[in-house]
Every structure is written in C-alpha cells, then in structure tokens.
Image (cartoon, rainbow, N blue to C red; front, side, top):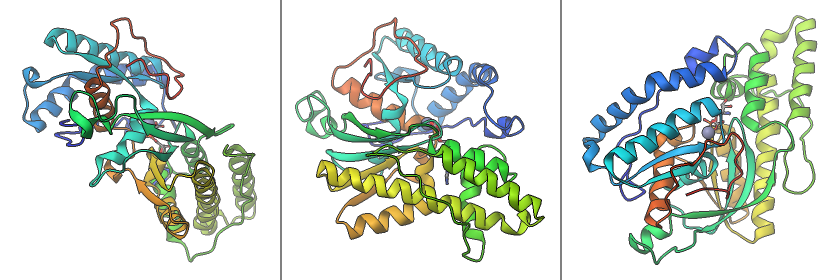
Length: 336
Ligand code: KG4
Ligand code: ZN
C-alpha cells in the first residue's frame, strides 16, 4: 500500500473451499491454517508489489473483532515484523477497514458520509467523519482526509446480513459462504419471488433472524410438497428482495436523519448485485451519492487493512507492544 490509496499487492489466502465441507468456519482450524499460511502470503505480497522488507515504512494488522486464534497469528506476526524492521506498528479495527475499502476506488468519497457495513459478522450504520488531525498531519491534507472517525447509528439486533445469506443458502444446498451463489440464484429464475415480510425493527437497527426462520419454514413446506427444486430461485429472489430492501430503507433513513447526502457501503455483502442495483437507484432518486467498495475489496482483504493502517500511522497513531487481539471490538475503540 502506497499513499493509503494505491494498492501495490493484495494477496488473499482463502479458506472458503476448505471450510465449505464443514458448513462454516471452525475457529481452531482457522487459527492453525493462518499460522501455516502467513509467511508464504506475506512473501508473495512483497514479490507481487516488487518491494523488499527494507522498503516498508510501517506495518498494520487487524486486532479485532474476529476469531481470536486467527487474529493472534496476524497480530503477532505484524508486531514481530515491525520490531525486526524497526518501523512503527498499528493495530486496525476490522470494521473500520471494511468502511475504508470504498475509498480505494477512483475518485474516493470524502467524509462526512453515512457508512453501511454489511458483512458475515456485522450489519451496522455509522456517521463517518474525518479523523482528528485531518488536513494538518504528516502526509498533508490529502492523507489526513483518509482518516475516518465513526459514530454508531444502528446495528443488527440478532443475525448479520451475511450470516442470514449463509444460513438460508445452506438450506438451499449451497456451500459456505453462500452469499455469492445465492445472489446469482436470485437472478436465475423467471422473475417470480416467494413473498417474505420485511424485517423493520425500530429506528436504524436491523433484524434478520425472523426472515431466516420464515425462509427455513417455507423451504421445509416446499420440500414437503416436493417442489423445492423448481422453487429454489423464487425463494432466493424473495429472500434477497427482503434483505436488500431493508438495508436500502435503513441506509437512506440514516442519510435523512444525519442530513448527509453521501453513503458508502463496505463488507462482503456490499458485493451483492441486488443491493448494488436497488441502493444505487433509490439513492439517486433521493439525491444521495452511493459509493460501494470496489468488488475485489468487499470480502475480507489485506488492502483495506493496509489503507486504514496507513492513515492511522500518518496521523502518528501507533499501537503499544502489549496490544491484544479482541474478539469483540466496537468501532471507534481502536488502539491505534
Ligand atoms: O466481510 P466478509 O468477507 O467477512 C466478514 O467480516 O464477515 O463477509 C463475508 C460474508 C459472507 O457471509 C458471505 O456469504 C457474504 O459476505 N457475501 C455475500 C455476497 N458476497 C459475499 N452476501 C450476499 N451477496 C453476495 N454477493
Ligand atoms: Zn470482514
């Protein structure tokens, strides 16, 4: 990562295929796989970027939220690398990194804006402003504007959107992570959609567990009638419509409430075609500029972590050597 904007390399060692046979991530195995893969992945990323260890000006690694066993591997590797090279180290909040991803595209949006985070573990809305020191710090005004600050507006009261995709996908026989295939399945039918009630809890909060249960009940009924195979696309289309309409309604309500006319969307579910289409159209109608993370930076990736880390380090924020991995880390509680 150069300048917090230019990605020199982004190597992802996905464990999706490995975990599809388990129907989800097995924490203990995820940590072990991380330990086995981290050095080859770092070497590969330097090779692709065409830089040497000695060229690095700082190191950033995720310190939470997430699976502790996996976080510990990256965090301790990052700290050790920074000490070995004599460069600063900073821990990055995974959620902040997901909302940094939309700034990796061309002509990055400038804060303030509303941030919609939709991933496998989180669904939340934030008012996002420029970080302290924006405009005046080392690296100048341009890099200062990339440092974001977050205020929570609303979040899911139960399941995350991506989690609901994975669970409903599983009912339809789609291996983990089911989001991308379920998204495609939703577009594969004849336009018919099973009707599902839109979950709309109070304020700017979300809820997806009722929808997941309704989908499970409908899938069981269709299977009982022996017509599940021919109705799979209609279930997918109905489920997707309920999820993306809810996300769109709440995100635009957040823009109205905060009087912000810019919206950025990050996290794995930001890759969803239905969400990209509906949210872009409805935002346009309401005079809101909607910006999604570039597709390659929606699912978990190192580029978004490096970008967030760059802006933290540029603002002089480094982490102490004792920084711990935190399974449950709120956004804004960043030790950087
Ligand atoms: O952000 P991410 O890579 O990991 C977390 O931090 O959780 O998000 C992964 C989640 C998975 O639940 C996956 O099924 C979902 O994002 N996902 C999608 C799509 N692509 C990935 N969900 C719906 N539609 C998609 N196209
Ligand atoms: Zn993620």
